[in-house]
Length: 131
Image (cartoon, rainbow, N blue to C red):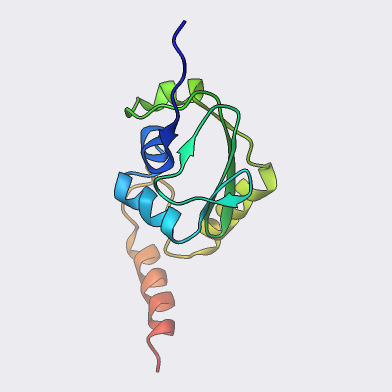
C-alpha cells in the first residue's frame, strides 16, 4: 500500500475546486482566510489526511475535512472522494440570503432580464450613484 504524502495547501485548495486558480488559493492563505485546525496557514503549509480546513469567503466560513490530500486537479464529481463538507446549513443559508437580497442578482438559467426588471435594476443602481 502506498503512503499518502502531504500536499501544499494552495495546491490542495485548487485541486478540490475550492478556488479556480492556485494563485487565488495562495492569496487567500496570505490574507489569513485559510485555517488548518484553527491555525492560519501560509501557501506552503502542508495538509495531511483528517485535518479540518476553514475557508473564509465572506460572508460565509466553509468547513471541510480532508480525506485524502491530492495535488492534481480532479473533476467536480470526484471531489467528494478527497474532501468532506462539514459547513453548517446556517452558514450556507447566509450566502443564499445575501444573494437573494440583491435586486441585481439573477438565478442561474433565468435568462436575460425583461424590460421591467431592467428598469428596476437601473433604478436600484442609480440610488448608489447619488453623491
